Amino acid sequence: MKADDFKILIVDDESGMREFLAGFCDVNGYKAVLASNGEEALELIGHSEVCDLVIVDFLMPGMHGVEFIRRARKQRPGLPIIAMSAWDDVEDSFIGAGANLFLRKPFDPYFLEKAIEVIARVDSSNQPNERIARLMEMRMPLAVPDS
Image (cartoon, rainbow, N blue to C red; front, side, top):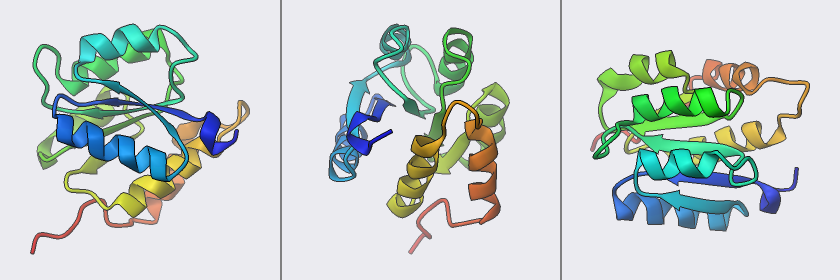
């Protein structure tokens, strides 16, 4: 799949983070689809052509990221999902709900870029969790160190 054909659904109630990630997608040749909450995002993923990957925040009004992932998994079980939060203690909840990868904010954009590249290369014969697990084994920094 060519990068410009790869669509990423960004789910975050903070407009600044949505804009940052949309710009990140643009610079890296991906198409960004934006949703400001979980309900809106669930409606969008109901249409398979809308996205190939979801990046979702934890704390959002109405529906938090973990609940969004649980519901998204029922609609599209194989859809890769990257979860993000400034809170360290939600990683297990995200992974338990079905996220493929967790990034702690602030995260290193290089790591996000590499994770997306891995996911974008997955074909129908290879599950994204396997490739992401190998990426995680590299133990690249998931967050920018505090100064």
